[in-house]
Structures are given as C-alpha cells and as structure tokens.
Length: 584
Image (cartoon, rainbow, N blue to C red; front, side, top):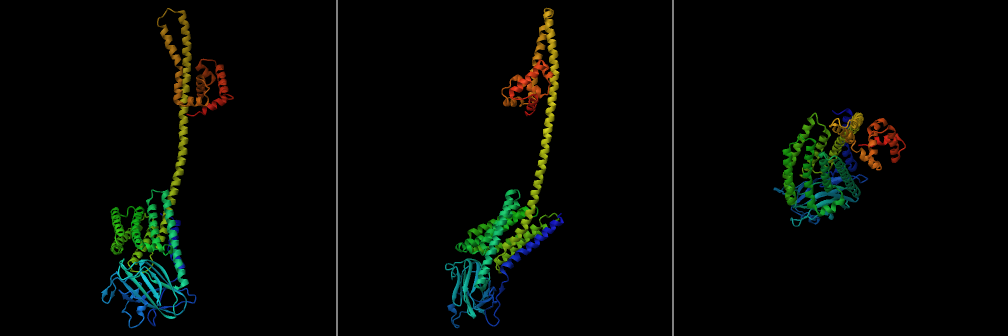
C-alpha cells in the first residue's frame, strides 16, 4: 500500500504534468483566432489591433475550380471567369461532390478568395504541409510556391512545405489565388490552415514554433539518454530498454515532423522517403508500446496476440518500404483498422490493470492512456477527419513525465534494495570471516594440543625405553651367554627409539608450510634448528625439549641463543613472536 507522502507526490506530479504542456503552448503561441467571414461581401475580413500582433487562421469557404490550374490573369474579366464551386478550406477534396461528380484523391485544382484589409502594413502568410505542391498569388503577385503543380503525374512534383509568403496588401479587397495538385498520395488538398498576420508577427510565431519543437526534441533526447543509461546499469529490466527505444523512435518521428527549418532543404529533396519514414515510425511506435506494456504488465497481455501483432506490423513495414507512395497512403488508411483495434485492446488492458488492487504502476497506465489519446488524435489528423498539427510529441511528453517518475522510483527502490543487500552481505561476510578465523584457530589449537600431548607422552616413553635399553645392554654384557633371544629384544627397543623423528610428520600435517616459510625467511637455519623451532612453536619448555632431544636443558637454552643470533633476533621472546607469525 502506498503511504500518504507517496500519494501526495503522485497527485502533485499528475497536476504538474497536466498543466505544464498547455501552459507552455499558451505561453509560446498565445491565442490564434480564425479569420471572420466578411458579412458585407465575399471572402474574409482581416482586422488588426494597433500593435499588429494578431495572427489569424485562414479557414472557411473558398471558390474551388476542379481540374483547372488557373492564374490571376484568368480572372481578369468577369465574362471570362471560369465556372466555380465552393469548398471548405482546409479540407481534403476526396469524396466531395462537384457538378454531380465524386472527386478522387488524384487531381489538380485552384482555390480563390478575397481578403479585406482595414490597415496597410507588410503582411505574411505561413504555409506548412507535409507533402504538397502549390503556387500562391496575392493581387497577381506570386508570393510563395513549393514543388510543381501539374495536370499529370509526370508534370507534378510534391515536397514538404514550410514557407512564409510576404506581400503588401491594398486597403479593401485583395485577391488570393492558389493552384495545387496531387498525384502521389491518397488525399488531395491541404492538411492545415494558413496563418495570416504582419510579417513580424508571423516570423515571431514561426520562431516560437521552431523553439518549442527544439525544446521538445531536446526533452525527448534527454529522456532517451536518461532511460538508456538506467538500462545500461540494470540490463535485466527490459522495460527500461523498450521505453528508451520507444523514445528514440518518437524522437526520429518528431525530427521529421517538426517546424525546424534547418531540415527543410534535406526533407524537400527526399520527400517520399521522409513521408514513408513517418508511416514506419508510427507503426514501430505501436509495436514497441506493446512490448513495453508486456514488460510492465506481463500477466495481462496475451503472448499470442503480441506475436500476431509483431508479424502483422512486420508485413506492414515491408509493404511500406517496397510499395509506391500512393499505395502506401491508400493501404495505410485500411491498415489503420489494426491500429484502432490494438489501441482498443490496450485501453481495455489498462482499465483492467487499474482495477487490480496490486497494481503498482497507476501513473504508467495514466501516461499510456494520454499517449494513446495523442496517437488517436494523430490518426484523425492523418485521415483529415480533424485539421491540426500532429500531437504525438505532446502525448509523449506526458508519457515521459509519468513513466520517468515511475521508472525513477522503481530504480531508486531497486538501488536501495541492492544497497541494503550489499551492506547485509558485507556484514555477513565479516562475521563469516571472524567465525572461520575463530574456528580455524580453535582447530589449530586442538591439533597443537594433540601434538603436545602426544609429544610429551612419547618423550616419556622414549626416555623409559632408553633407560631400559641401557640397563638391558649392561645386563647383556654381564650375562652374554644366558639367553639367545636377548639381541632381538634390544634391536626392537632400538628401532622404537629411533622412530621419534616421525612425530615431525604429524607436525607438518597441521602446519604444512611452516618449515618452507621459515627456510625462505632464514635459509641459514639447519635441520636441527628447524626441529628446535617446531618444538618452540608447540610451546614446549627447555626441560621438555631436552627430554625429547636427550640433552641437558642448558644445551637447549644455548641452542636457542645461537639460533637467535644467526637470524638477527635479540632474545627468545622475539623468536617466539616470529614463529607464531608464520601462517599456514
């Protein structure tokens, strides 16, 4: 269960997340109004405040000339004016009924209207579209063009449009004429409305759009680097990887769709590749979104559905790459049913996850819902059901905000958990080292006590045997012929006495590297010196060592002094410290 502090933090994050993007957009763009219809006549009425900062959208009813590429000179005389229909601008002409004819997507046309100006100052029209060809005149002056509108596919070439046309209006009625053609895409016409305002105001809003697009791109890039960095430090969590990959795909898509004029020239030369890339990134976004969802909610999404979606998206991507653009745009319209069904399924799973009591990622689900909403809006824009700028990047900002918050908490919890585990392991290792050291010391002490007891026992035995041997030897001299097996008894006792050096083998088993280490440190020591060191290591006193070596205690004391002098030690205490410090 989440505590009160966590709930308040989430609530604050949600409020900030919902508020920051609209506030940012309003701060950058202000209010853009639609040009009002001229009620006293035809066309539109363009009015300005004294500062000339008002920006208007050119949206409304215009004259429409189907399959005619007309220039201003074609409207010179009233009698010669061609027959026109009316159409709402901006809008696709697909399916519109003109002279009882249902219009196809392929074709060419001319738009015409008038603009009523009440003030005289340099004006500008901003045109932004993703794939089109047009020529635009105001009062007979060509102020803007892109691509080449023609009457056949061979004569027509379209490109990505990001243009500003500047003109000086006359007071009163001003004529606007625009040719356009489409033969390479399913939809004909314009996706977005034109902006009209003073030159400074249009340039200012254009700069603002580029700044906010650059800001969004920078934010997305930083989010990618942040999440890929988290994944590098925790490669077992695939959710970090898929989220970083999702951000990278959206970054590429936003780079293609942005208003940043730096890329205009490049995109114009490769407009078909650019447009196909926008389709590809849209499908990849959906696919990676599902993979990310699978890592967050592994039990909710069916693996069979995920496998089917991967195969289907793979087929779509191959179709998009190899097919002509017209069939891609036509096929994309039909294949968007898959997108719709996938999003419905994803929303169903998200709602289902919200209802689970153990759900630990409510912000992830909320961010996904907002992201899905932005994808849906973008699909409507692409199909020209609504007319606006693409919104996927703004949905991604919400998604990044919520998901980075969740992944940050998840990473922090994991890091603290690992840190606690490391500290616990360090404490346990230290305790284990102490236990091992203590147990080892206890085992060594037990072995040394065993050697000492055995040594003392054998020492007494050897002493007794030596005395017995001496007595028997004397007795043999006195009674040389009394017993023929007497020599055998003496030989057996002599052999047992000579076995006293075998005790060193037991010492070597307990301290296998003692003699080797001592010889490396002091190679001048003799075998008798090494044997004496072993007895000292066993804490035997001079009398006990003397019994073992069958010498007088004074001889042992002098042997110790000679050995200390040989290896450069002052006294016996330093010798004992040296021997005790020689580890196994």
